[in-house]
Image (cartoon, rainbow, N blue to C red; front, top):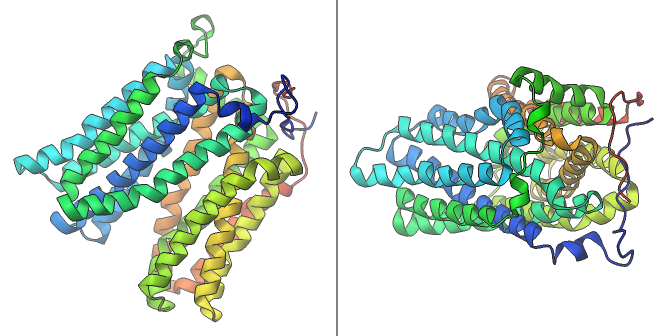
Length: 430
């Protein structure tokens, strides 16, 4: 048996109704969409306000700001596999509500400390680490929850819609955060972040009580170490999952380096004015929305795994446009990069998540998601720090070219010959 994931099909109940047509009337799924939007707004406000507080009020230098960013990724890289065990064994709705409620307290502690005059940089570091831990644990839990909320043939449309909801928050969150910081200051603006997390908690609490039945029954549970090995065994044994993790990790290594250098390269080497740089970033948001709209149709017509393979390579090739901008026509080149990268990377991410959910056994959804997330998050700060260090020595263009090459080599592993899978897979959706 090959490991190509099953092709999503229309709903069995009514072949004339698309999966998204059904999901628009699916209350639990709509609650998840609302949760994703609220969570995204909360994260964007929190990230902006914490960075501004560190730099403007607490005099953090470039290294201090980098540490703040790294602390938001580190918990996900280290703890995601354990979060996967927790997601498979816990009462999922209660876990999600608890994690989000704790976010309200953690983020809300910053304006409280600011009002009391006791805010320190160490406090911001602790908030970044704790908030990152809660964010990435919830991410794993919700990836495990979606296959329990919708049918297999609805997963692709569901992941597309959830990505769209997150994108709306990513577009509106920074603008709202900037306005709040401008009017009230960075610390009080975090009250809005806490409020967004509180709304998220209420939406999660309204999810069906059936999600409080653990995916893994008590009778089949073993020690935590054995549970971790069970999830890792699925990733290692399934060629598609293994390649997704390796390709995603390598791709994030290259793109992380490119992202770390992008602003400095565009402003100092390409001399892009602020309005052009703003349009370049805005084009990525537009491209992400387009990717959400195209994902279901493209992946269904091309077959899910083929869509993943094609989009991964095209997204990697798009990164070469960044160093190519130094040859001339910098603004059009970077605009084309953001548009092409935004569309293909979004389709790839949606297809990859859907494939993972279709292949992973129901009682191992959390652990498979946890291992995948850990691998993907670990290489982002590694790529960013390595890119910055090498650019100081070699220059931006050589490092950006090497970053694009790294991403392309990683994406190319999707095209290696298949081997037969050794683990059982769920039946294709009907």
